[in-house]
Image (cartoon, rainbow, N blue to C red; front, top):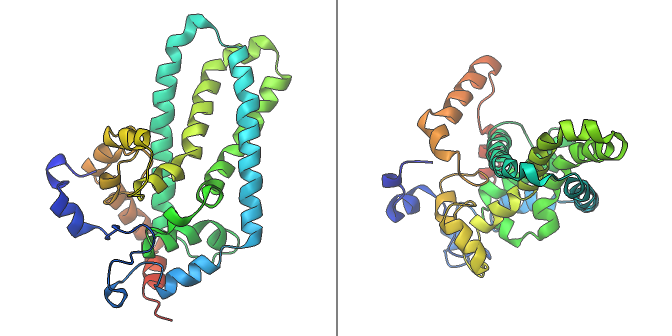
Length: 272
């Protein structure tokens, strides 16, 4: 993130899209808006959310929750009170890893690729393009549409974890127990990434405990997110300090010839 001095209200208003109305930006004159649900590109992208995609998201969420519960029972079963102090660093590492990994994925999907790419484009890149044209669309998505893809990402390792807890002997499980705690917590934070994202765009009706977590930067704050898109925002400052994302873009463009955000611009320019 930028330094504290640059994050005053005036700077944020100047450098980010207005989001005063999460139900559709209706307080603004639609003729003057370059974004929002009335934008031609946003309408097309929203219409590409299919029944098949919905089914995939439902299955992913069910599988993830079942595997979370299954693995958590084994984590509790093998918990040794003598190593309780390792849970805190595992949790912190899980947050930081999820923050960085989701930042990389979010940046990658924001910056590269096209909605026309078979399978990946319409199913996984489309929501990023829609979000940039209609940034409050995520506040109108239900739990399934908001979180389905993130829950899906965790399923492969949760399956592997369940296999180890089921078939490995106790001595082998205890050797890797701390690592499994870390991976389990990482899975939780990755699963909730888009929910944090949604809350950062929701300006009305949030529960008080969510506002409290945002206020103290435990999860991504609303004001803070108007300049950046990440999970908790913990890694914003160090990454911005070294120009991590811009340097990475320069390297990729140099060796691949691909222009960053070219697909984003294409959809933003649609008028019909």
